[in-house]
Length: 308
Image 1 (spheres, helix red, strand yellow):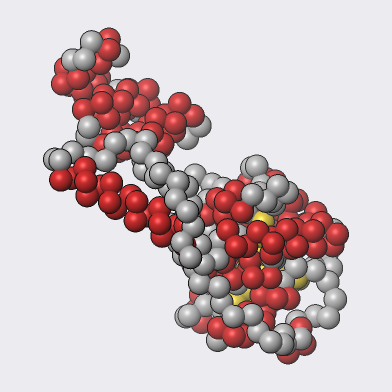
Image 2: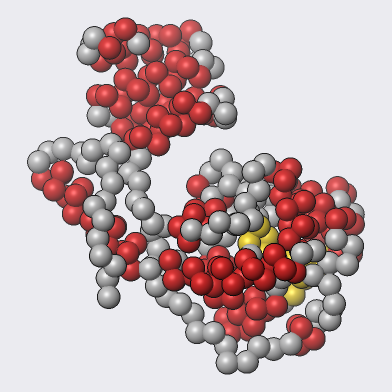
């Protein structure tokens, strides 16, 4: 760090490379190398060093903060998702072959998103709410369901009889189904995309756990963008199933969340501010490139009025 403080960045980088040749599992050295590379403007290499440090020490908060400084941060999720038309009438539960009673926990996601860690969370929900029903959709390939059921039979046999598979549905029927779910389950380590936006049409609460990777943090980011105070975000993986069951067994809280989510859905759906922010980033990046420079670390878009 002394060489970096003196501005002798090339020497600092070389010194850290020598240190890592001797101790490649030293997370602190990877972090410090990232700082030196960042100071040189080698942002891609700095990110790689930070990622290696975090892989060695996942709770390395200081390094995570350094990594965030390298990234370009927008104020909105980079998506302008057009509001789908709400069906004029909603098909009843019986038309989907769903039980008339009991909380419906839905995870209408592609089956390749079901990580083994998610299996035990589903088992915890099934155990915590014996009267509830977990509903998922068939995969594109019919063998996916059988592979999943085989895995459950070996590790969490209760799921074989507690999870109901429905056939894949056209868009209008899918929205009908979404209207019936009481609680949606965000698949851990993978997360939700289209389903998040479609759920907000009805305000259906989505239980989520923001994991290490961006793809699993989208729902939590959406809740933050919406300003939802009582969002069902699990602090740890172990909190996920109890949170889902608590929500599933508390109709009053579910309905309050539903109302608040629907009221705040405008912050997500047809959000042209996200387009304006990305436009601002592209213009700034092109201006910097025209000067033979990179866009500055920690750059933020200037506030703009929401587009009409």
